[in-house]
Amino acid sequence: MVDYTLSDYHERSKHRVNRYAPGPGQLDWANQPNPFRYYEGSTRIELPLLADVLETDYSALRCGRLPAPHLLSLQSIAILFELSLGISAWKVYGNTSWALRCNPSSGNLHPTEGYLGTAGVRGLPAGVYHYVSGDHSLERRGEWDAPVEFRGLILGLASIAWREAWKYGMRAFRYCQHDCGHAIAAVSYAASALGWRARLLAAPGDVEVAALLGLDRDVASAESEAPDCLLSVSVSELGLAKLPPTPTRWHGEANSLSYDHVEWPDIERMHRLSGKPHLYRKPTDPVSVSHETAGKPARNLPAAQIFRQRRSAVAFDGSTTISADAFFAMLDATLPRSDVPPWCTWPWVAEVHLAIFVHRVDGLDPGLYVLVRNPDAVAPLKASLRSDLLWHKIGPPELPLYLLVASDLRDAARLISCHQDIAADSCYALGMLAHYKIAVNKPWRYRVLYWECGMLGQVLYLEAEAAGIRATGIGCFFDDEMHALLGLRGHVWQSLYHFTAGGAVDDARLTTLPGYAFAESRSASSS
Ligand SMILES: Cc1cc2nc3c(=O)[nH]c(=O)nc-3n(C[C@H](O)[C@H](O)[C@H](O)COP(=O)(O)O)c2cc1C
Image (cartoon, rainbow, N blue to C red; front, side, top):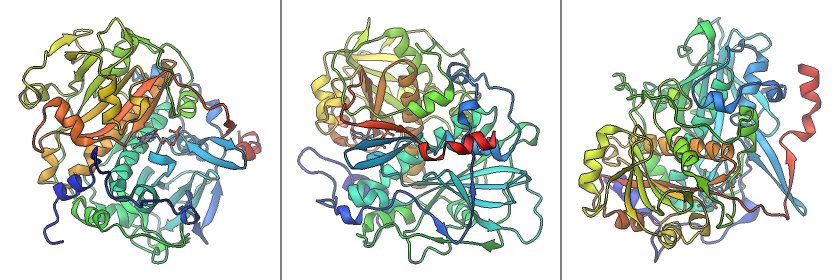
């Protein structure tokens, strides 16, 4: 297709009430992609399992009270990965078992791969490493022939779209970006729990990310990985790590994840169209909220526990309620603060707002609310949404939350979420309204909008756990039904991700095992 545009993809990948976005039809189970990538032939370094020793409380972290920085060591790097991209549990049903990770993923397909560039760490030769969550190890992919000046940590993320496309077809490109956002936030939280700061580097373009992570090499026979982003981790006095040079020697060959592949040309086009260029201008600093974090979570648990107990609810009880204060506290955690994870990691201005269906919040009318995360967006949103909305300010004075419609909207929320009951039986469901217009002329920003949505999702997942309820990301929604409800026309605002949280009903048929049950001896021997 000549002149393929962002809106071609966006429209074609929308689910509609009378027609879902093009997908594979039925699932070819024999061809299901391997959830773990390995670089065969590379040197493997087993990481110790030490996250249990971390004393940081989640309630301190969510207010930006970080512990004293841990020393940069193989041990602390191991904790960083264990609590961000590591396996958090195994689920067992009959003869089938599957791994869950600290970072959620649409359909549990986990397209996101993690990388590390480091030098100057005892026990870890300088180089670029690939993280294998399956056995919590690092594979040494790249090294430099001569000593490099670079010191510190650079984390890299990349996506294997085929893992998502196998199940979801064309819409998979969106899900890869959501998942990347969840992973960015997971890294940000884990780094902060170690007293470190992670910062997403706005400048590097895709070509530089691919070159540094070795994504532009050696994948001829295997599924390619699309570069996502680099995060610089500031470890005590070292400050933010500068980018290392591209390694001069590479090791290992990527494993093939499936024996066969289905081509999704729209995804290929999107990879090209939304490629991120190098940015020479520093982005405008995000507006940081100045007020203290509102409210406390109901439970004060270790951050490591919250990160690893995070799960998606598969059903809600339709009766659990939360207090208005707990609800306000969760929303407050989504506001951009330059000193609080995960927003301390985010270099861009907030461009995504929450349109919330409140179902079961004590003291709040059921109805439609909006949380405007950037004060500059209030007027444009008012101008774009239906003209008969109330816009009544609700909650603590500093929380930019407005009641738009007081009404029971459970049926609407269920319908919009592809008829999923989780959107109606919960305490709340929401759609993430993104300033889509900014991506029309700069399609790389389309990916960034989804990353911001994924980060919001990660905040809300963790906040739900801390409040004693549970959440679920919703990638399956009828885009234009949501827009119609809000009275949105055209392509200025688009809802890019949905979400819900409530009182979870567990599936009693499943058994849960710890993430690295088979490797427990490693923690004892390395501590
Ligand atoms: C981007 C995204 C979209 C998702 N969409 C749905 C959805 O539409 N319906 C649903 O029941 N779960 C959805 N989930 C939840 C995933 O299925 C879940 O994260 C995955 O199975 C892994 O389980 P865990 O979150 O408990 O680790 C979504 C998760 C993500 C991150």
